[in-house]
Length: 84
Image (cartoon, rainbow, N blue to C red; front, side, top):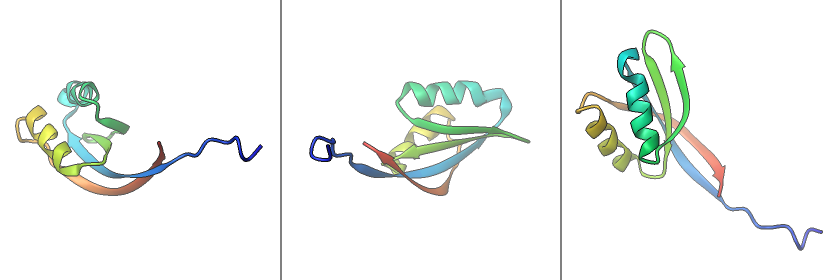
C-alpha cells in the first residue's frame, strides 16, 4: 500500500577529495572514520586519494588540518544526494 510506505528524506552532501601519501593513508582514514567522517572511496595511484562526504566542508577542513598537521588539502569534487 502506498499509504503505508514511509517517507524518505534526501540530503545533499558535498564531496571533497584528500590526496595523501601511502605511508599515512591508513592512519588518516581510520582517524577520519573514528570522528564520524563519511569516507566514500579510497583510490590508490601515485598517492592515496580519499573521497569524503560532508554537510559542513569548513568543519571537515578543520578536522583534516588537525589530523594531518595542516598538510592535508581538500579539493571540491561535486555533491551527492543520500537518503536520510
